[in-house]
Image 1 (cartoon, rainbow, N blue to C red):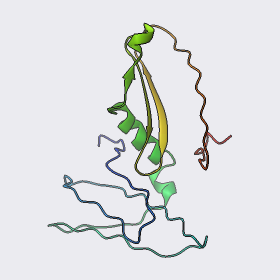
Image 2: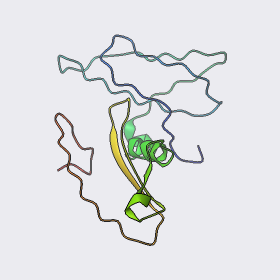
Image 3: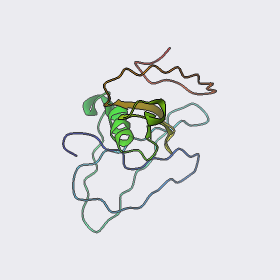
Image 4: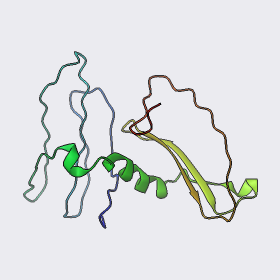
Length: 138
């Protein structure tokens, strides 16, 4: 959409089959699949697409799509998040934050500051089993 990635839907489930339904406008879409098999080995999997018209499915290496694909798609999602909270109660109107854990297992903390003030906030997270994505590993 306008050269940007837009997150449509995601899942994180340990099911034999994972599927979704929806009506998408004609265009180009990317599907990100990551399977973590219990035995730690690589296995083949299938991806099916059903609809009233022909669909061309092409496998792209992630390097060809771009390293910021996931971050950019969730950034666009965060900008429209229903969980955006305004900091007006702190006396800082036009400043917003969204903290969200998505259905596909990605979490983000998004700030939008359209005020004329600096925002200084300290957050503490206790995360078990979580990993930060590059380049935020630490």
